[in-house]
Image (cartoon, rainbow, N blue to C red; front, side):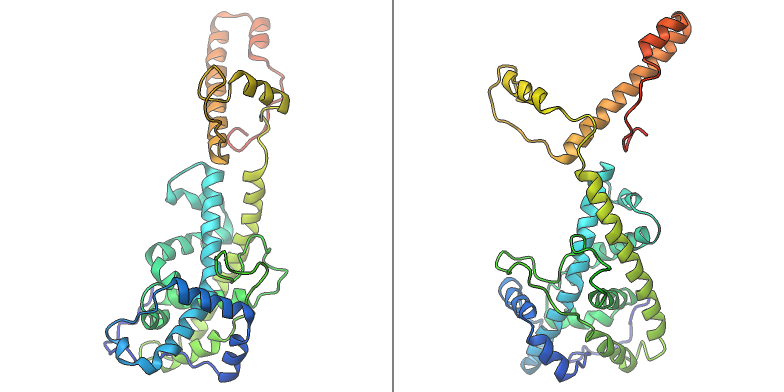
Length: 323
């Protein structure tokens, strides 16, 4: 990971020079206006000691911070959704195991996002001084790569990412009107390229390399979107051994699904993860029972009785944990 380490004072102006026409078109977007109002109400727009000395530049810093939030937040939401689906599918609480729920480019993209978001969660959520957040965009190769990737994803055709897998760019707020979204945000790419050209550390030679790396990450994120749709269907599908409605009603009458045997107490609704863990426990007990019966049958029981006891020939239900 390359990092800008040149010793120089923090600039008083934003490194991004976005054309006035592009900014006017973006400011006219209803979705972007809602986003800016939301961030103004929910985030701290106070500046650090260095940048507070330049009040004339504060509106520009805040505007560029809002653009970064609009770019990166949908990718962050996608990563969080992918993590939740991986937790449910793998029934594990270990973050290092979550990548096993994906494969190929999707796994590479998930692992990259997991490492970056863990280290830079404040920047991804645009917390802190707006000027410091904006200036940090060109601080490392990873920051630049995610920013370029987010811009590429925002300009992708609508048919590529499923709408239910990739969250829209609207802020997660109860006051946000449903269906309101942001326009494509390619404005940051020319401004970012020019900022790298003018930067004494990066220079003009890094842009082709960084763009190629961002294209690879963008392809991996598209794969992650597709696999999130598959995991969503997997974890939301009913268990093949789920209790029938009539049996469930009888258990409710008899108190079998309550905390006692008298049918009294608070009714509990198990989560999908709890149901899957209970099913795994049942499958484990079944496998142990079959292994014990096989050992016992091989030693002392005739073949006919062994086959009858072990129920050979019965079709087993295929599942995630017991193929």
